[in-house]
Image (cartoon, rainbow, N blue to C red; front, side, top):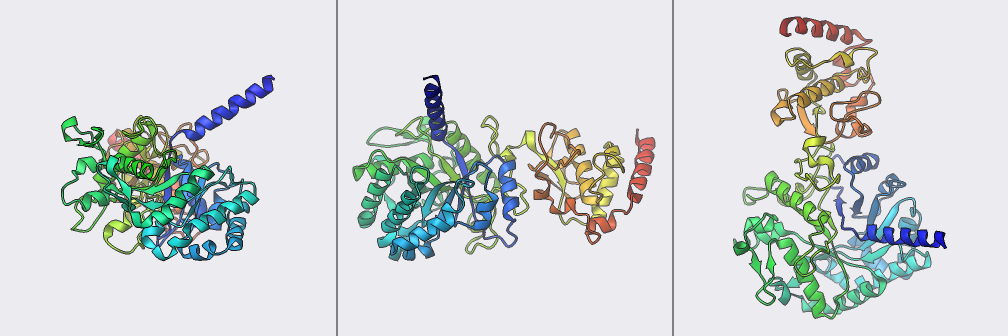
Length: 497
């Protein structure tokens, strides 16, 4: 009896945990220098990102994600939709190869059947629900239907008259697809996947939508938008669109299907005609979004019931076509360095690029070795950094190259100076990062108690020991550099102390 009670308590606890709102990220791959899947997963771990959405079911990524506990959404690309929607056998084969072969080692939790099919690939719309049902049947056959949900991300543009939310309804021309889709989602216990982009809503509003309202910035009650039917106040676009989706579903007599947001974000850079695609606005939007979701604020229609959300996206994608903004939605660059430092104090440990308590100063990968050497000399001299740990036989001697040694000196100086942005410049050869450069027994300032497994993400060359490494060629052989460094430290100490 006691065991049964314990199991029930554990089940309730797990259910509660699963119901907690979460922030995930989308992982796009349109990069000219796409990191290896193991590097992607290392970044996810370091940033404590526990939910991801893939735009396909790439085997390399699924293998790298195995045994990490990270919850994974896989996707059927739009170009595969017609084949799967017309053949139960094709759908079963897809599930066998891309889901069953990896589960449960890889914690696959949902399958996105296409993306924004109604608005981007309307000729496939007639087979969309069939494709979802065929995929679901394959999951049932593998006894995975309770563990893995099936849905299809929708563009919020299919919601018409989205404000006031209480008057919202779906574009009626899509009802022949949406009604059976919602029936399927309801009967299978799944959720509506919705892509929401307040940036585009703001840009297309011709000044009707205030920037602060799009960015989740606090508004006085007099500046909030008011639903004239319900008299409910809305302080941001995101909540208004989510509630519009709930009202649009209710208009079709579906009132108990939850919504998750599969894409949202804000670009950090744009063309001249995109003046509000800035780093500051992207930081503001995503920081406020994360706090809003994690703090379980909910929406005015469903207060306290937060909507789990996936940020678009993990990396800037330099190979995207279109305006500059299309290439700049990422939280990180291809090296794993944050595009900006999120302001998340008080929102837990998610996305450590939160900032001030978890930032480091590292040598720029690819920086001129001579400039790095000069900056290292300065840090260990006039900068008064204790560089003794870099000597041969000391914890931070290996790897013996200028990038690794400069990173240690830069970061030590950066922390001693209170982690101000101007203390991590060194004539342009240093960058602030959230990736802990500690490795082995070499523990960097601010990283005590944390492991250093992420060193290869921001500076892949730091562990290089090959003789053709630029850093190694310039920065010493067989310990000779350590002798020079020791002499410099002694001389500088005599002069400046």
